[in-house]
Length: 81
Image 1 (cartoon, one colour):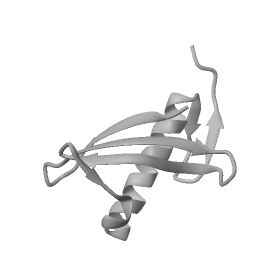
Image 2 (spheres, one colour):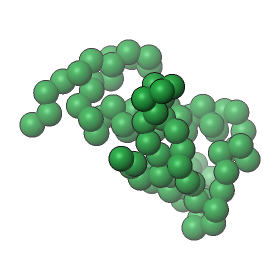
Image 3 (cartoon, one colour):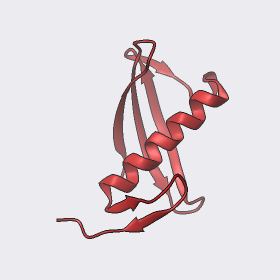
Image 4 (cartoon, helix red, strand yellow):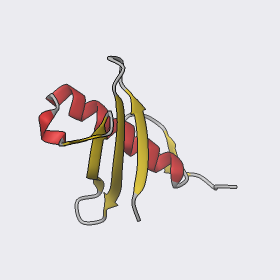
């Protein structure tokens, strides 16, 4: 199952990312990305931008799937109503 994350970047760009969770690597994987409705690759981003995006996607995934974010690297499963 994949998810779509919409991100409005500080410079005004609209980023739409389709992503999924990898059971093999235990992290998010980007399936496809568009910036201002144009195809974009993660490798075209700065390292800082990639790190920020991956953190946003991980937090979004954990939130959607019933995990409470305790800190940047630790999550606790919570009951979803």
